[in-house]
Image (cartoon, rainbow, N blue to C red; front, side, top):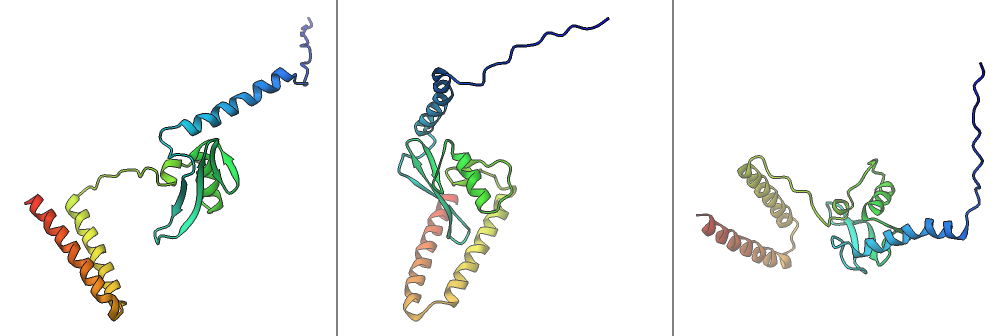
Length: 162
């Protein structure tokens, strides 16, 4: 017995004018939706990726049609973050755009709040000592004034806790 197979007619690969409109319409709708996303800052805002030393590593701008990074318009903030991460040499397969561009910072509660407070104090104290060592005679007064205002703020916090 031989099996009979039905042959399917070949579909035309030519696109009609109507089919072309259908393929481009969703992209336009998505791009417009990006501009209306309430989580994004208003168009014209420039977002910068800053390293721990305060230097700008990369930046993008919010536009009506999406997010522009390195001359390319992306439809989502995460797509722009992925392109920037690739340029920076990061090997992530996905990237949360809001976290990458510092629109939101993921919260992580400390395991031990007192230990976290001690670490913050040690970092502050180390920074002040480093600044004081390299201070010029002209800047010592400004540094002392800043430390004094910090001390007053800490006293205010102490009164609220006590």
